Length: 278
Image (cartoon, rainbow, N blue to C red; front, side, top):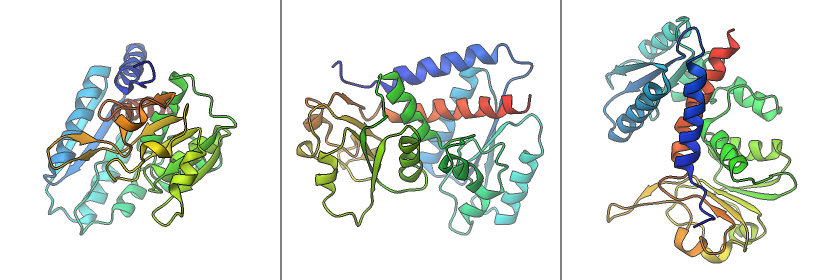
């Protein structure tokens, strides 16, 4: 369908451009990923990031730690990477074991190497519309919108979900692009009514098929950040894709939509961090 926003293709094109630029550099950009424990999903995510690094010509350093590592030991590992001149980006794969304060670990990463864009300094810069390293998923969504020819300026935008990883920075990305933004959370009244007024909908609430077909107006752009595994083993997003695809001017599939953009944007951020040292 012509209205499908193909995240796989957009991400592949972005990774290709990054790989071509890497060939011109004095050394490969370095990305270090710390994986703590044996969470199966985290292992898959880290492997996908490692493969993307290799494809783009990056130096990839995967650091695997036992789930019994102490918080102080993990913080010292982050310090070591902060001091390593060949490492341009540091990523700590979440979730971490319960005995470790994730916020404390993320804040320990140098803002200059915070390629996830989660630390307070980088979020603050995004808030001030002076972004440096931006959260990967929201930035990837903005790249998708631009690739699809969607001009955010003046559009009514509704973001469903208020997480620090997606919802809040996504709202700021759209606001910085001069959209008019409503952000909904679990206590928002009449979410359906708000979505019906939206020109652009970004769903990241973590509930399968939460956004119904009759919530979305004809010609809207629908970006589905969610990925949920159903009882039968199939994957679906946070929007009812089959009910909405016929009326949306643009819609992202799950899988194959936003997911590939997150990893491609991680590489983009690492390259930004590398060039900032020059």
